[in-house]
Length: 222
Image (tube, helix red, strand yellow):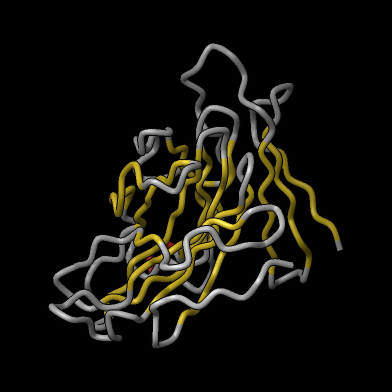
């Protein structure tokens, strides 16, 4: 276990996520060092640090991943995935007034800890969408998965979109889990698996997309 390192943040740090790259981990969290309501309207921000395989903190002051906003924000639903050259961190902004649109934003961090691009708006899910997100590297890009409540109804459904390494979103509106994600590449993508809980039947559904079967396949397990 690495030694404890103290950083400059003096308020709360919450909702962390962790992922392994090729030679280090990246951990990201919600940070209140700028104040809950922010200095100059920044609000809470997203920070990260790299850790080596022994758990030693490589960036004790943290790496700021978010870029601030004109309204105080709470950042929620952090997800991280690593690839051969760095990491992608995704979260959802949520304004304090509960009315302002809450886009998904992303920051790409190199393996050396340098921010390659920061706080980019990836897509805007429907209003009322849950902040639960999941992110996975597919070999040549990322798969971002989230849940939403369509048309304000009681049920929820899973949606997904592919994100390129440069931040380009191939399905800006997302695709429903009931439909296959279209492929624009000549070679089949690696397998990707998403899981979720179905409250009505108290089962967990597993949905896989593999190179041998391009459509989504579903099964449920107790």
